[in-house]
Image 1: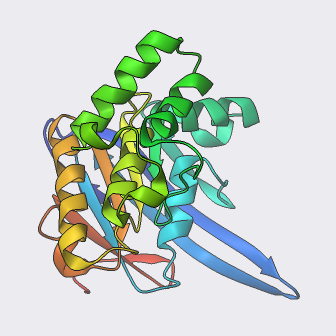
Image 2: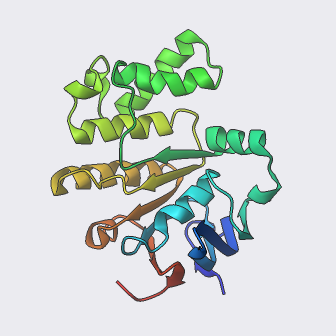
Length: 236
């Protein structure tokens, strides 16, 4: 049975239907996800929590189109990701979803502005609107005054905010965050969750996995728990 997560209109923006993911490890088959089903409404801030190895990152990678399920289906609106070829999946990653990782993956030789602009360049945006959009995004995450700084000149929290701005470059409907505060102290973690919540309040669906249950519960509309690759409820 799917876990319904209603918010706003209550219309499902994302449906995960009986999704399983298996990996071969030598002679063994490891089931990272086991028949996971859920519905996420448009505009929801969903927190996914669970211990290390519970399948959280596997699920997020499937939602992002970085991997394919062994069985089951993932629907974004009326689009089944399993029906997409590699080029269409690349468009999904570029246009429909923005992805934020625990490791910031900023290019060290580029400024904050250049890191955000690069995502726009890949989308074919010309120089002037690219610069304006990148500056707008940096301002949105509170870093307009740090635009000309390279990653080594920024704190961990500032680097993650640059990464969030980059993820938002093409105005995706979904923002997927994989342990975005995993490398940050508690005060900076709160700042990052505030940024994510503000982006959610602007109408974007946010799906965030975290090991910090107490913290994410303060910002997410709903929490689901993964345990041994299965969705469970009421266990934290």
